[in-house]
Amino acid sequence: MATGRTHRPATRSRGIPEATVARLPLYLRALTALSERSVPTVSSEELAAAAGVNSAKLRKDFSYLGSYGTRGVGYDVEYLVYQISRELGLTQDWPIVMVGIGNLGAALANYGGFASRGFRVAALLDADASMVGRPVAGIPVRHIDDLEKIIDDNGVSIGVIATPAGAAQQVCDRLVAAGVTSILNFAPTVLSVPDGVDVRKVDLSIELQILAFHEQRKAGEEAGVADAVLPPAAAAAVREVAAPAAQGGRKGPDGDVPAVMPA
Amino acid sequence: MATGRTHRPATRSRGIPEATVARLPLYLRALTALSERSVPTVSSEELAAAAGVNSAKLRKDFSYLGSYGTRGVGYDVEYLVYQISRELGLTQDWPIVMVGIGNLGAALANYGGFASRGFRVAALLDADASMVGRPVAGIPVRHIDDLEKIIDDNGVSIGVIATPAGAAQQVCDRLVAAGVTSILNFAPTVLSVPDGVDVRKVDLSIELQILAFHEQRKAGEEAGVADAVLPPAAAAAVREVAAPAAQGGRKGPDGDVPAVMPA
DNA sequence: GAGTGTGAATAGTTTCACAGCG
DNA sequence: CGCTGTGAAACTATTCACACTC
Figure (spheres, rainbow over the protein chains, first blue to last red):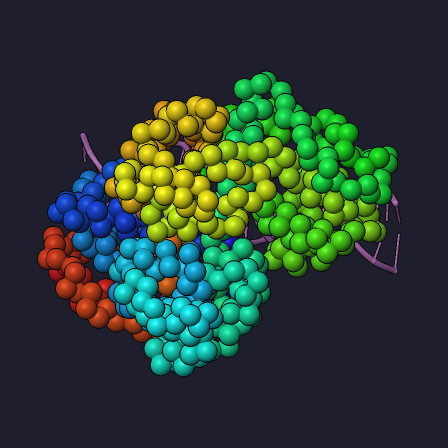
């Protein structure tokens, strides 16, 4: 996934690779499940299976945190839960604000995982005055005008944006100006933020499009041909355009270009 | 994010890198916006800025698709929109089913981006009989018992799971058995699927935890100390466990281990 | 001159395979 | 003996920098 790439000036960096960081929550979830079942220890093999990765990767990941296992035995579940929680900063409570309490925002607010260990919803904010005061997930919605005050009063540093695309950048700017330095963005827009602010984006339609790509591949494969799928009505969408007539190198990767190509 | 890693047996693979594929939807969105404003051409620099990447990366990405630009000029917007759409398989219509029409599911169904170019909701399914028949986003919810028939009748190959975690694997198995080969999973669980099935996962709490990690880093930085943040109530969560007393190598990365460490 | 396309250099990630510890 | 921890190898991704084309 994508994040603002301002991550570490590499000064005295303890340097846990980003890819590893992204998997720690996965391990933590699997470990928590084991902990609830009072399982005392796990091997890298077992835990890896539960987290859906392979064991070499898991061991390498853990090696960045320290030597927390016991050779010949495995990892102590409770101890690892604690170490990973601490590494992720979940031993403290992060107040968050969520802006945009529409369909999606309300669903997110109601979502269990949101209020999960480590996070606390300081406020739900919306620009729509008719939403204000109405409780969502037991928390009354407040007006977005209170944004700065709420962030300041609660020491909020993480914001969630679930507004329509058009409002997102503006909301983002306000959040950042008020002191938020991490943003989780559900609006289908690229946010631009100053250095030092992290943005992560969750985008439904992008995920679907990636799946469609692979799906198409599979279909082409079955048919034994690469370009089995001909553009149907798409031609209509393509306007007449200037022609790069004699293309030198590699052309359309399917060997040749479809009829709709400007020619 | 994560996908089932069964991607290509490397046979005559046209091999567009996965990282590139994941960015194509981003480019497509930016291009679509330009297209709506009737902008005829863009340079890699401009488009990269709009998509939030750097221009070298963008050019490299496009070079995997073919030589679609014109030196000294840039890229033809309409032409590129078409080429990327085709590459992503969006010139055909993908019927999808969504299972689990709770808060989140309903929000997703209502989400604009869902019905966006290339996708069509064939059905919304829920296990709760009292939901059945009720229209969500204009589509009547159907009972999950109809899953197999719906998938078969509509040739659905992409499924979206928005059920509670407990039901997800079971739903997944049914989807796969019925012929679905791509799954977008919103439930906070690792799904296990046979080879050839792609899974992408969207997980709110994981994203937040990743942000918390970076946030903690920033805080530690300011304070000038690495372990500025002491574990507060977390100790309570940690049970007494067997002690890896004399650890040989590298220990807790903050130099030394906190009091809660099993000793 | 402006801007693409791309080899080569670099950085980051995963996998292998095995030494070494409990 | 079982399983961790980790160097080294393999692979993937990003960035650089410039030849080449329009």
